[in-house]
Image (tube, one colour):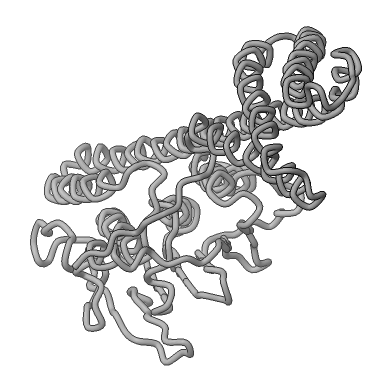
Length: 431
Protein backbone atom coordinates (compact mmCIF):
# COMPACT_ATOMS: atom_id res chain seq x y z
CA UNK A 1 0.00 0.00 0.00
CA UNK A 2 1.33 3.40 -0.93
CA UNK A 3 2.25 5.67 1.95
CA UNK A 4 1.33 9.32 1.65
CA UNK A 5 4.08 11.68 2.70
CA UNK A 6 2.67 14.49 4.83
CA UNK A 7 4.73 17.65 4.86
CA UNK A 8 4.13 20.52 7.26
CA UNK A 9 2.97 23.71 5.53
CA UNK A 10 4.99 26.87 6.26
CA UNK A 11 3.51 29.05 9.02
CA UNK A 12 3.07 31.99 6.64
CA UNK A 13 1.74 29.90 3.74
CA UNK A 14 -1.62 31.59 4.47
CA UNK A 15 -0.97 35.17 5.58
CA UNK A 16 -4.57 35.64 6.71
CA UNK A 17 -4.50 32.58 8.96
CA UNK A 18 -1.08 33.50 10.32
CA UNK A 19 -2.31 37.03 11.14
CA UNK A 20 -5.26 35.77 13.21
CA UNK A 21 -3.12 33.18 14.96
CA UNK A 22 -0.61 35.86 15.98
CA UNK A 23 -3.39 38.27 16.99
CA UNK A 24 -5.08 35.78 19.28
CA UNK A 25 -1.81 34.50 20.71
CA UNK A 26 -0.34 37.98 21.30
CA UNK A 27 -3.32 39.66 22.90
CA UNK A 28 -4.17 36.49 24.82
CA UNK A 29 -0.66 36.50 26.27
CA UNK A 30 -1.01 40.19 27.17
CA UNK A 31 -4.27 39.49 29.03
CA UNK A 32 -2.78 36.49 30.81
CA UNK A 33 0.28 38.45 31.90
CA UNK A 34 -1.77 41.31 33.39
CA UNK A 35 -4.22 38.89 35.01
CA UNK A 36 -1.43 36.91 36.71
CA UNK A 37 0.18 40.17 37.86
CA UNK A 38 -3.12 41.37 39.37
CA UNK A 39 -3.72 38.07 41.16
CA UNK A 40 -0.15 38.00 42.46
CA UNK A 41 -0.71 41.47 43.98
CA UNK A 42 -3.94 40.20 45.62
CA UNK A 43 -6.23 42.41 43.56
CA UNK A 44 -9.97 41.64 43.57
CA UNK A 45 -11.21 39.16 40.98
CA UNK A 46 -13.59 41.66 39.41
CA UNK A 47 -10.49 43.56 38.24
CA UNK A 48 -10.09 40.81 35.64
CA UNK A 49 -13.18 42.22 33.87
CA UNK A 50 -11.44 45.58 33.61
CA UNK A 51 -8.30 43.94 32.20
CA UNK A 52 -10.44 41.98 29.72
CA UNK A 53 -12.15 45.16 28.47
CA UNK A 54 -8.75 46.86 28.08
CA UNK A 55 -7.37 43.87 26.15
CA UNK A 56 -10.40 43.73 23.84
CA UNK A 57 -9.97 47.47 23.21
CA UNK A 58 -6.33 46.96 22.19
CA UNK A 59 -7.27 43.96 20.03
CA UNK A 60 -9.95 45.98 18.20
CA UNK A 61 -7.73 49.03 17.67
CA UNK A 62 -4.94 46.79 16.28
CA UNK A 63 -7.37 45.45 13.67
CA UNK A 64 -8.05 49.01 12.51
CA UNK A 65 -4.30 49.68 12.47
CA UNK A 66 -3.71 46.59 10.30
CA UNK A 67 -6.07 47.96 7.65
CA UNK A 68 -4.34 51.35 7.66
CA UNK A 69 -0.81 49.88 7.71
CA UNK A 70 -1.67 47.61 4.79
CA UNK A 71 -2.22 50.75 2.70
CA UNK A 72 0.79 52.62 4.06
CA UNK A 73 3.33 49.81 3.63
CA UNK A 74 3.36 50.24 -0.16
CA UNK A 75 3.96 54.02 -0.06
CA UNK A 76 7.25 55.89 -0.17
CA UNK A 77 9.34 55.34 3.00
CA UNK A 78 8.95 58.95 4.21
CA UNK A 79 5.17 58.82 3.76
CA UNK A 80 4.94 55.39 5.38
CA UNK A 81 6.90 56.21 8.54
CA UNK A 82 5.45 59.73 8.92
CA UNK A 83 1.83 58.65 8.65
CA UNK A 84 2.49 55.56 10.76
CA UNK A 85 3.76 57.77 13.63
CA UNK A 86 0.67 59.99 13.38
CA UNK A 87 -1.76 57.05 13.22
CA UNK A 88 0.00 55.32 16.12
CA UNK A 89 -0.25 58.41 18.34
CA UNK A 90 -3.98 58.72 17.58
CA UNK A 91 -4.48 55.02 18.36
CA UNK A 92 -2.58 55.30 21.65
CA UNK A 93 -4.64 58.32 22.71
CA UNK A 94 -7.85 56.51 21.79
CA UNK A 95 -6.82 53.40 23.72
CA UNK A 96 -5.75 55.42 26.77
CA UNK A 97 -8.98 57.46 26.66
CA UNK A 98 -11.13 54.34 26.67
CA UNK A 99 -9.05 52.87 29.51
CA UNK A 100 -9.36 56.12 31.53
CA UNK A 101 -13.12 56.18 31.06
CA UNK A 102 -13.53 52.51 32.02
CA UNK A 103 -11.34 52.96 35.12
CA UNK A 104 -13.35 56.06 36.04
CA UNK A 105 -16.51 53.93 35.99
CA UNK A 106 -14.84 51.08 37.90
CA UNK A 107 -13.25 53.22 40.62
CA UNK A 108 -16.15 55.72 40.88
CA UNK A 109 -16.40 57.01 44.46
CA UNK A 110 -13.26 55.16 45.66
CA UNK A 111 -10.62 57.31 43.91
CA UNK A 112 -10.69 61.04 43.42
CA UNK A 113 -8.79 61.45 40.10
CA UNK A 114 -9.69 63.49 37.07
CA UNK A 115 -10.01 62.08 33.54
CA UNK A 116 -6.86 63.92 32.47
CA UNK A 117 -4.88 62.41 35.36
CA UNK A 118 -6.05 58.91 34.50
CA UNK A 119 -5.33 59.51 30.78
CA UNK A 120 -1.76 60.63 31.41
CA UNK A 121 -1.15 57.78 33.85
CA UNK A 122 -2.44 55.15 31.42
CA UNK A 123 -0.61 56.32 28.27
CA UNK A 124 2.44 54.11 28.84
CA UNK A 125 0.59 50.78 28.55
CA UNK A 126 -1.16 51.31 25.16
CA UNK A 127 1.97 53.03 23.85
CA UNK A 128 4.00 49.93 24.73
CA UNK A 129 1.47 47.42 23.42
CA UNK A 130 0.45 49.21 20.21
CA UNK A 131 3.99 50.42 19.50
CA UNK A 132 5.34 46.87 19.82
CA UNK A 133 2.43 45.55 17.75
CA UNK A 134 3.14 48.08 14.96
CA UNK A 135 6.86 47.27 14.92
CA UNK A 136 6.11 43.54 14.73
CA UNK A 137 3.56 44.08 11.95
CA UNK A 138 6.04 45.94 9.75
CA UNK A 139 8.90 43.56 10.56
CA UNK A 140 6.90 40.45 9.61
CA UNK A 141 5.58 42.01 6.41
CA UNK A 142 9.03 43.25 5.45
CA UNK A 143 10.40 39.73 6.02
CA UNK A 144 7.63 38.19 3.90
CA UNK A 145 8.24 40.73 1.11
CA UNK A 146 11.98 39.99 1.06
CA UNK A 147 11.31 36.24 1.11
CA UNK A 148 8.80 36.55 -1.73
CA UNK A 149 11.27 38.56 -3.82
CA UNK A 150 14.02 36.03 -3.09
CA UNK A 151 11.73 33.17 -4.18
CA UNK A 152 10.79 35.04 -7.35
CA UNK A 153 14.45 35.74 -8.10
CA UNK A 154 15.32 32.08 -7.51
CA UNK A 155 12.56 30.96 -9.87
CA UNK A 156 13.71 33.44 -12.52
CA UNK A 157 17.30 32.24 -12.16
CA UNK A 158 16.13 28.62 -12.45
CA UNK A 159 14.13 29.48 -15.57
CA UNK A 160 17.10 31.33 -17.05
CA UNK A 161 19.37 28.37 -16.30
CA UNK A 162 16.87 25.95 -17.86
CA UNK A 163 16.59 28.17 -20.93
CA UNK A 164 20.38 28.39 -21.20
CA UNK A 165 20.73 24.61 -20.89
CA UNK A 166 18.02 24.12 -23.50
CA UNK A 167 19.78 26.50 -25.87
CA UNK A 168 23.10 24.72 -25.39
CA UNK A 169 21.44 21.34 -25.79
CA UNK A 170 19.74 22.43 -29.02
CA UNK A 171 23.12 23.48 -30.42
CA UNK A 172 24.31 19.88 -30.41
CA UNK A 173 21.94 18.39 -32.96
CA UNK A 174 22.70 20.97 -35.73
CA UNK A 175 26.41 20.61 -34.93
CA UNK A 176 26.25 16.83 -35.24
CA UNK A 177 23.92 16.87 -38.24
CA UNK A 178 26.24 19.24 -40.11
CA UNK A 179 29.12 16.76 -39.90
CA UNK A 180 27.06 13.61 -40.51
CA UNK A 181 25.14 14.99 -43.49
CA UNK A 182 28.42 16.11 -45.00
CA UNK A 183 29.64 12.51 -44.76
CA UNK A 184 26.43 11.18 -46.32
CA UNK A 185 26.72 13.74 -49.11
CA UNK A 186 30.29 12.58 -49.78
CA UNK A 187 29.18 8.94 -49.97
CA UNK A 188 26.38 9.86 -52.38
CA UNK A 189 28.80 11.77 -54.61
CA UNK A 190 31.07 8.74 -54.63
CA UNK A 191 28.02 6.62 -55.60
CA UNK A 192 28.40 4.50 -52.46
CA UNK A 193 24.67 4.20 -51.96
CA UNK A 194 24.69 1.21 -49.61
CA UNK A 195 26.93 2.84 -46.95
CA UNK A 196 25.02 6.11 -47.40
CA UNK A 197 21.70 4.33 -46.83
CA UNK A 198 23.08 2.48 -43.79
CA UNK A 199 24.38 5.76 -42.34
CA UNK A 200 20.99 7.43 -42.85
CA UNK A 201 19.28 4.53 -41.08
CA UNK A 202 21.62 4.77 -38.12
CA UNK A 203 21.34 8.54 -38.08
CA UNK A 204 17.57 8.29 -37.75
CA UNK A 205 17.98 5.79 -34.91
CA UNK A 206 20.46 8.05 -33.13
CA UNK A 207 18.24 11.13 -33.45
CA UNK A 208 15.19 9.17 -32.30
CA UNK A 209 17.14 8.05 -29.26
CA UNK A 210 18.51 11.49 -28.36
CA UNK A 211 15.28 13.42 -28.89
CA UNK A 212 13.60 11.39 -26.14
CA UNK A 213 15.60 13.25 -23.51
CA UNK A 214 14.33 16.72 -22.68
CA UNK A 215 16.78 19.62 -22.94
CA UNK A 216 18.67 20.09 -19.69
CA UNK A 217 17.60 16.67 -18.41
CA UNK A 218 19.82 14.32 -16.45
CA UNK A 219 20.44 10.72 -17.53
CA UNK A 220 22.48 7.91 -16.07
CA UNK A 221 25.90 7.12 -17.51
CA UNK A 222 24.56 3.79 -18.75
CA UNK A 223 22.09 5.55 -21.03
CA UNK A 224 24.71 8.06 -22.13
CA UNK A 225 27.03 5.22 -23.21
CA UNK A 226 24.23 3.61 -25.17
CA UNK A 227 23.64 6.90 -27.01
CA UNK A 228 27.38 7.21 -27.60
CA UNK A 229 27.53 3.71 -29.12
CA UNK A 230 24.73 4.64 -31.53
CA UNK A 231 26.79 7.62 -32.61
CA UNK A 232 29.95 5.50 -32.97
CA UNK A 233 28.04 3.04 -35.17
CA UNK A 234 27.47 5.93 -37.58
CA UNK A 235 31.08 7.08 -37.49
CA UNK A 236 32.41 3.56 -38.09
CA UNK A 237 30.63 3.66 -41.43
CA UNK A 238 33.01 6.48 -42.36
CA UNK A 239 36.29 5.44 -40.78
CA UNK A 240 36.02 1.64 -40.53
CA UNK A 241 39.11 0.21 -38.80
CA UNK A 242 40.68 3.66 -38.41
CA UNK A 243 38.29 4.36 -35.55
CA UNK A 244 39.22 2.31 -32.47
CA UNK A 245 37.43 2.75 -29.16
CA UNK A 246 37.92 1.40 -25.66
CA UNK A 247 35.67 2.08 -22.67
CA UNK A 248 36.48 1.35 -19.03
CA UNK A 249 33.45 1.98 -16.85
CA UNK A 250 33.21 1.20 -13.15
CA UNK A 251 30.04 -0.58 -12.11
CA UNK A 252 29.38 2.11 -9.50
CA UNK A 253 29.52 4.78 -12.19
CA UNK A 254 26.85 3.24 -14.43
CA UNK A 255 23.97 4.79 -12.47
CA UNK A 256 25.66 8.16 -11.97
CA UNK A 257 23.67 11.19 -13.14
CA UNK A 258 25.08 13.56 -15.72
CA UNK A 259 23.67 15.99 -18.30
CA UNK A 260 22.31 14.29 -21.40
CA UNK A 261 24.56 14.32 -24.48
CA UNK A 262 27.64 15.29 -22.46
CA UNK A 263 30.05 12.71 -23.91
CA UNK A 264 29.04 12.69 -27.58
CA UNK A 265 30.53 16.13 -28.41
CA UNK A 266 33.81 15.11 -26.75
CA UNK A 267 34.06 11.93 -28.79
CA UNK A 268 32.98 13.77 -31.93
CA UNK A 269 35.74 16.33 -31.36
CA UNK A 270 38.29 13.54 -30.90
CA UNK A 271 37.15 11.88 -34.14
CA UNK A 272 37.35 15.14 -36.03
CA UNK A 273 40.82 16.13 -34.84
CA UNK A 274 42.46 12.77 -34.05
CA UNK A 275 40.95 10.08 -36.28
CA UNK A 276 40.15 12.08 -39.41
CA UNK A 277 43.57 13.75 -40.07
CA UNK A 278 45.65 10.55 -39.68
CA UNK A 279 45.84 7.73 -42.19
CA UNK A 280 46.21 5.18 -39.43
CA UNK A 281 43.32 6.71 -37.50
CA UNK A 282 43.39 6.91 -33.72
CA UNK A 283 42.18 5.22 -30.59
CA UNK A 284 39.60 6.95 -28.37
CA UNK A 285 39.35 5.86 -24.75
CA UNK A 286 36.60 6.67 -22.28
CA UNK A 287 37.13 6.06 -18.57
CA UNK A 288 34.53 6.59 -15.83
CA UNK A 289 35.32 6.18 -12.15
CA UNK A 290 33.72 7.16 -8.86
CA UNK A 291 36.26 8.81 -6.57
CA UNK A 292 34.74 9.63 -3.20
CA UNK A 293 31.71 11.79 -3.87
CA UNK A 294 32.88 12.73 -7.38
CA UNK A 295 32.37 11.17 -10.80
CA UNK A 296 35.49 11.41 -12.97
CA UNK A 297 35.12 11.10 -16.74
CA UNK A 298 38.17 10.99 -19.02
CA UNK A 299 38.13 11.06 -22.83
CA UNK A 300 41.53 10.45 -24.43
CA UNK A 301 42.67 10.12 -28.01
CA UNK A 302 45.95 9.20 -29.70
CA UNK A 303 45.77 12.02 -32.22
CA UNK A 304 48.34 14.73 -33.02
CA UNK A 305 47.76 16.56 -29.74
CA UNK A 306 48.55 20.20 -29.08
CA UNK A 307 52.21 21.15 -28.95
CA UNK A 308 51.52 24.67 -27.73
CA UNK A 309 48.67 24.31 -25.23
CA UNK A 310 50.15 26.99 -22.98
CA UNK A 311 50.13 29.67 -25.69
CA UNK A 312 46.58 28.84 -26.79
CA UNK A 313 45.13 28.10 -23.35
CA UNK A 314 41.45 28.95 -23.02
CA UNK A 315 40.58 28.41 -26.69
CA UNK A 316 38.41 25.59 -27.99
CA UNK A 317 40.24 22.34 -28.68
CA UNK A 318 39.21 22.48 -32.31
CA UNK A 319 40.52 26.03 -32.66
CA UNK A 320 43.86 25.01 -31.09
CA UNK A 321 44.38 22.02 -33.36
CA UNK A 322 43.31 23.91 -36.46
CA UNK A 323 45.75 26.71 -35.60
CA UNK A 324 48.62 24.25 -35.27
CA UNK A 325 47.71 22.15 -38.26
CA UNK A 326 46.85 24.22 -41.37
CA UNK A 327 44.61 22.43 -43.81
CA UNK A 328 42.84 20.39 -41.17
CA UNK A 329 39.13 20.81 -40.46
CA UNK A 330 38.14 24.18 -39.01
CA UNK A 331 36.22 24.05 -35.72
CA UNK A 332 32.74 25.51 -35.48
CA UNK A 333 33.54 26.48 -31.88
CA UNK A 334 30.56 24.56 -30.52
CA UNK A 335 32.00 21.33 -29.09
CA UNK A 336 34.06 22.01 -25.98
CA UNK A 337 32.71 25.52 -25.46
CA UNK A 338 29.24 23.99 -25.29
CA UNK A 339 30.37 21.44 -22.70
CA UNK A 340 32.05 24.12 -20.59
CA UNK A 341 28.91 26.24 -20.57
CA UNK A 342 26.60 23.33 -19.80
CA UNK A 343 28.74 22.20 -16.87
CA UNK A 344 28.93 25.76 -15.53
CA UNK A 345 25.16 26.11 -15.77
CA UNK A 346 24.45 22.73 -14.17
CA UNK A 347 27.09 22.61 -11.41
CA UNK A 348 28.56 26.10 -10.98
CA UNK A 349 31.92 25.92 -9.20
CA UNK A 350 31.34 22.30 -8.16
CA UNK A 351 32.68 20.90 -11.45
CA UNK A 352 36.14 20.46 -12.97
CA UNK A 353 36.88 20.68 -16.70
CA UNK A 354 40.48 20.30 -17.87
CA UNK A 355 42.26 19.58 -21.15
CA UNK A 356 45.76 18.13 -21.35
CA UNK A 357 48.12 17.40 -24.23
CA UNK A 358 51.19 15.18 -24.12
CA UNK A 359 54.42 16.14 -25.89
CA UNK A 360 54.31 13.04 -28.07
CA UNK A 361 50.74 13.55 -29.18
CA UNK A 362 47.34 12.71 -27.83
CA UNK A 363 44.76 14.85 -26.14
CA UNK A 364 42.82 14.31 -22.88
CA UNK A 365 39.65 15.91 -21.59
CA UNK A 366 39.00 15.44 -17.86
CA UNK A 367 35.60 16.14 -16.27
CA UNK A 368 34.71 15.84 -12.60
CA UNK A 369 31.18 16.44 -11.35
CA UNK A 370 29.38 15.64 -8.08
CA UNK A 371 28.39 11.98 -7.93
CA UNK A 372 24.71 11.27 -7.48
CA UNK A 373 22.62 8.27 -8.44
CA UNK A 374 19.25 8.35 -10.10
CA UNK A 375 16.20 8.03 -7.87
CA UNK A 376 15.88 4.29 -7.05
CA UNK A 377 12.23 4.42 -8.16
CA UNK A 378 13.40 5.54 -11.60
CA UNK A 379 16.23 3.02 -11.95
CA UNK A 380 13.99 0.28 -13.26
CA UNK A 381 12.24 2.61 -15.72
CA UNK A 382 15.56 3.93 -16.98
CA UNK A 383 17.30 0.56 -17.13
CA UNK A 384 18.82 0.04 -20.55
CA UNK A 385 18.23 -3.47 -21.88
CA UNK A 386 21.53 -3.54 -23.77
CA UNK A 387 23.74 -2.98 -20.73
CA UNK A 388 23.74 -6.22 -18.77
CA UNK A 389 26.53 -8.23 -17.26
CA UNK A 390 26.80 -10.47 -20.30
CA UNK A 391 26.02 -7.90 -22.98
CA UNK A 392 28.56 -7.43 -25.68
CA UNK A 393 27.88 -3.70 -26.07
CA UNK A 394 25.65 -1.05 -24.54
CA UNK A 395 24.18 -0.43 -27.95
CA UNK A 396 23.59 -4.07 -28.86
CA UNK A 397 19.96 -4.33 -27.82
CA UNK A 398 18.72 -0.95 -29.00
CA UNK A 399 20.88 -0.08 -31.97
CA UNK A 400 19.07 0.23 -35.29
CA UNK A 401 19.41 -2.76 -37.64
CA UNK A 402 22.46 -2.80 -39.89
CA UNK A 403 22.13 -2.77 -43.66
CA UNK A 404 23.80 -6.16 -43.83
CA UNK A 405 25.84 -8.42 -41.58
CA UNK A 406 29.04 -7.66 -43.50
CA UNK A 407 28.43 -3.98 -44.14
CA UNK A 408 31.65 -2.05 -44.55
CA UNK A 409 32.95 -0.05 -41.65
CA UNK A 410 31.20 -1.99 -38.90
CA UNK A 411 33.85 -4.10 -37.18
CA UNK A 412 32.66 -6.22 -34.30
CA UNK A 413 33.27 -4.76 -30.84
CA UNK A 414 34.90 -6.65 -28.02
CA UNK A 415 33.59 -6.55 -24.50
CA UNK A 416 35.54 -7.83 -21.57
CA UNK A 417 35.62 -7.34 -17.83
CA UNK A 418 38.89 -5.81 -16.74
CA UNK A 419 40.07 -7.16 -13.34
CA UNK A 420 40.32 -3.81 -11.58
CA UNK A 421 39.22 -2.81 -8.10
CA UNK A 422 36.57 -1.52 -7.83
CA UNK A 423 34.94 -3.61 -10.59
CA UNK A 424 35.36 -1.99 -14.00
CA UNK A 425 33.72 -2.84 -17.30
CA UNK A 426 35.74 -2.45 -20.49
CA UNK A 427 33.97 -2.02 -23.81
CA UNK A 428 35.42 -1.35 -27.23
CA UNK A 429 37.52 -2.58 -30.11
CA UNK A 430 41.03 -1.82 -28.87
CA UNK A 431 42.74 -3.54 -31.77
